[in-house]
Amino acid sequence: MSKKIIHSDEAPQAIGTYSQAVKAGKTVYLSGQIPLRPENMVLVNGDIREQIHQVFNNLSAVAQSAGGSLQDIVKLNIYLTDMNHFPIVNEVMAEHFSTPYPARAAVGVAQLPKGAEIEMDAIMVLESSPHS
Image 1 (cartoon, rainbow, N blue to C red):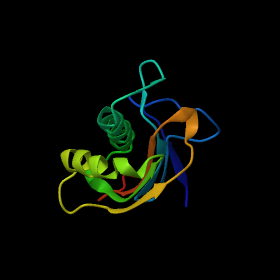
Image 2: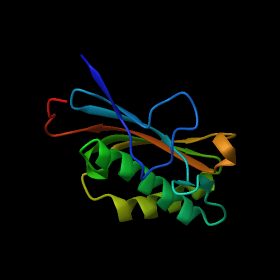
Image 3: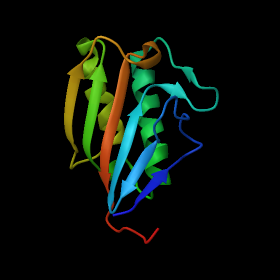
């Protein structure tokens, strides 16, 4: 099976040896996104709600470049440096997703890249897979 590298200028550029996403068949594996603003690669600081929105916006941009949307995500992994922010994640997630919600894991971690407080990665399955 061939794989296709997915890239979006509307999401932060990769800051390491990885792709924003990789498509294999109808499945798209979206790399972790932290709350970086794509236009200047600066981390959103302060309000965790704004940070969570930025992460979803970044994931959405990559999903769209792959031919899908957040609604096509079947598995979402959330990494938090402070699990007290988890209720806010639920509130913001409800603004970006509708039922049926994806499967999900939320993990407390000691540290994330660039000092971020949240990171998310996802697996998306597209309804149809154009030959590309």
